[in-house]
Length: 345
Image 1: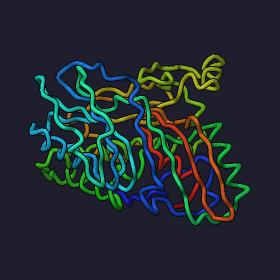
Image 2: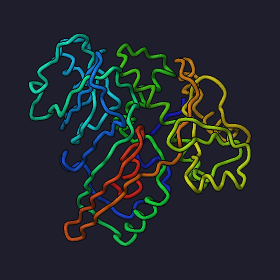
Image 3: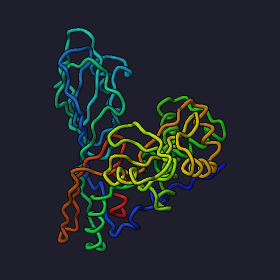
Image 4: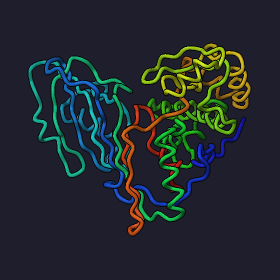
């Protein structure tokens, strides 16, 4: 068994060690997240799209409270993605309520969460069904090289950052990975479906990060390799580029396509040639994890190695030693993966 000694600095930085140190999440108001739904509620249907603002509140716990409030099963409440607990976030939930009755939504409000709106819709809200997430973050007690910090921020705005899964995916001190190891290697049975899913996702995400990190080390995480599974920007569709020719280089430069890494599962790697050999050989260090993910029934998928924050802006106050950041990310990408390239928090 490979022992995973996880820490947020385990993976390679794209632009070198961060030029400054600082503190994030000093208070919930320093970490603001707003979900961008990407469509509007239809006004009819057996579901309600409920827009909530929450503070210091766990997403899954809030979904269960919502189910209790309207007296339905927890499985009839869904959300597009988990959101940070130590933060202020606006988030969408769908609540299945057939019939003509409508709850008194204003009663489902406390100091920590409030209903912004609720409108009927025909379909359940599914995981990942967002256009993106907007972030407004404050880093405090910033110390270090401010001139290099400005340069780093400009590089990120132009080139993006590694699309790492954030450290929150792996649990405190990598506990989710440790439990995944016990499942895959020691045969530990986890009865709680939610926890089991967290451990499986942590293992799969870690393997992606390993590949992404090694690609950064080899300086080809943005340039691509022969046999690369290239993802079309803004989608999950991909094609295999057998050769990195002039046309592929041009499309990469225009951010029309993106190199990808594996989300492990059953079946053959879709990459070919040099890229497949690289991915296969690198991940052979984790045979029990690969086998475990395959036996669970997950299929081979791909994830872009790079993510480029949009609407990226910042304000640095050298007197107050604070850095304010604003940017938008596609669903599934992590603000902490942007932050780790900027500041040692």
